[in-house]
Image (cartoon, rainbow, N blue to C red; front, side, top):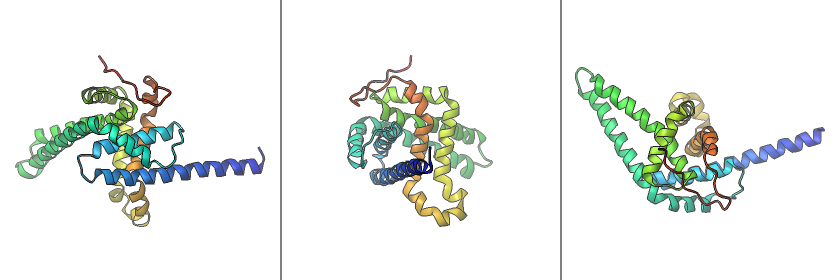
Length: 225
């Protein structure tokens, strides 16, 4: 390969990276806007993951606005109850943590350990449930059951996904000096970037599951026994 071909290949890769970055910025904005009512955050996450999974499969989709809202509408009925139950459980666990650390004297270790362990378990399942909803059609109950099973069947990937999400969301605290300079980039990519990296980590197990139909209709992913 001569220098001209190498330069052309480099520019093509740069163009591809720029296209991915712009798509992620658009998805980040859409996700934030659709999370404003709070109750719609679950459907917004599924819509964002749906667009990202198509990006990872190399399917050209142009600007993601239309596809995002189509996926959002399709996922709303299934994702919303799952998200609300997850949010309620996390609020209860936050209350247990507050009681154990700031109310109980001395610190109530039982409630503290219970809150931390259950929060990790729920977050592990949450790392899978929305990508599964983006990949397959199923009932809310089946998605939750499959998410728990997939989370523990692929524990290293689950831990990696949780670490990525925590690092992205805590970056303003962990890297304060750098954040002062590049904080604007974090605002543009914080949520969609975390989802993109999460989907990349979970992509192999998801691809190992029954493939999607050629016409892009999601098939039912049966419950595990």
